[in-house]
Structure formats: structure tokens, C-alpha cells
Length: 311
Image (cartoon, rainbow, N blue to C red; front, side, top):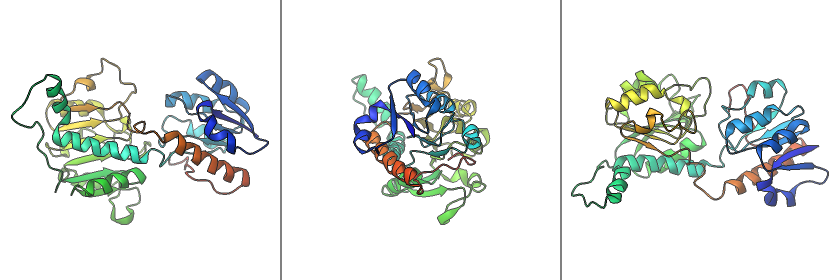
């Protein structure tokens, strides 16, 4: 049994690996591509998801692919499904950091802390505050009320925000995908936290943006392809919504000349939400080792992806 694993995680993994497992440690993209060809197990996450997807696609003998990513929109899911490959994702590894970032987005937007920083950079002393929204008694719609979505909701409720969640099944009193659009104009914060699938692509388009309050903010910590960016730029330019806090965009990295950079009242955080922590690799290593024990013993593993649904 051969496994290809990241050299960065070697100190965390090697002491607990089972005897007899043939391990190749990759340090760069070319090494990962070469090593994965005959591997049975692959944890080949790299700086860019498209690199990871390319490496995974080169595996001819894969039985299990482990990834720290929660969203697998760049992965060759059809190829993996056809090969009967088990895929486990990193759902939960970055949940706390991403949830905190979403709350950060709401707070920054409410108090316009981005403008406060710019005022301070100019060494000015204003007589008025650029942002005056109190979170207390505002309302939030969280589209994607899974692990991260629920964490966001719990944290916002502590500020006195009334939270509504959207799930595929409508479980626990949440809204179903066919229900949330009708009440979109009721919310002050529209937060995207759903996995990226064919069903979620461009789910926020011109119609949805027009239905939002003109005082509402869009907060995206999910995937950039969930938003029709041309429609968003138009809505921001024409002040149809108050603003957008975007941790994710499409494409990534966003080209310097892209008009979304300069759209009015837009705050970019360059997909740093999941990276804003120090425990990611430790959590990922623990999850991998737990799943490796289960895989070798033929027991059910954690975070197994439904390749039909894409998450």
C-alpha cells in the first residue's frame, strides 16, 4: 500500500503511521504529480486547488483521496466517481476560523472599519463615525447552514442578530433552497456559506441582488462562483445594495485589472479566512490519521464526500 503525503506534515504524521505503509513525501507540485501515479492513498493538497486537482487526476490506482479543502469544485469528481475512489474532505478543520471571518465581515461592514483604517492612515481625526449600524436587532440569512453556517449563526445571535438558515433538506426549521428567495428583502446580512455545486453556481444574480434591501450587505465566505460578479458590480455601482464583503471571488487570484477590485463599498480579504489560524495542519493531520486507521481496518471514515452532490 503506497501513500503520497505532504512533506510539511511529516513531523505530525510519521510517528503514527502504520508499519508496512510505503510513504512518499512530496515537497512541490512536480513531485506530487510524479509520486501519485501508482499511489493507493493521496493527501496531495497544494497552494492552489487547481494544482491539487491536477495531481489527483494523475492517480491511476487511487483508492482514497484525503483533502483539507471543504469545497471540491475544482476536483475531477466524475473521474474519481468512475474509479470508485473514496474522498474525504476537511469539513470542520477551518470551521472556527472561517466562521470568525464571516462575523468579522459583518462587524467591519456595520462599523465601516475599512474606512476607519483609511482615515487613520491619512492621520485625520473625524468628528463622526463612518459606520453606525448596531448588530442588535438586525437580521441575517445564512445560505448553507452546515458546520460553518451554524457557527456563524451562533456567534451572530450572541450580538442580538436574528438568524435564518438555509439547508438542502429544510432540517431543524431552516429554509429549503426553494424558499429563501421570497423573503430576501427582509435581511440586513446575506451570508454565503454553502458548498459550491452545480446547483449553487450564480445563485446570487441580478434578480436576487434587486430583491435585497438597499441597506443590506452580501458576505461571501463560500465560493466566488456562487455570485454573478457582473451583476454584483452593477448593483454596487448603482448603490442597489450597501456593500459586499468578499473573502472569495472568481477567478482566484483576482487579476489586478478586474473591476471588482474597485467596485464601490467592496471589501476584499483574498480568501484568507481559512488561513487565519495556526492549527490547520494539526487538525488536518489528526483527521488524516483517524481516517487512515479506519481505512486500514475497513471501518467507516469521517467526512466522506458524496461525489454525486459534490460535498
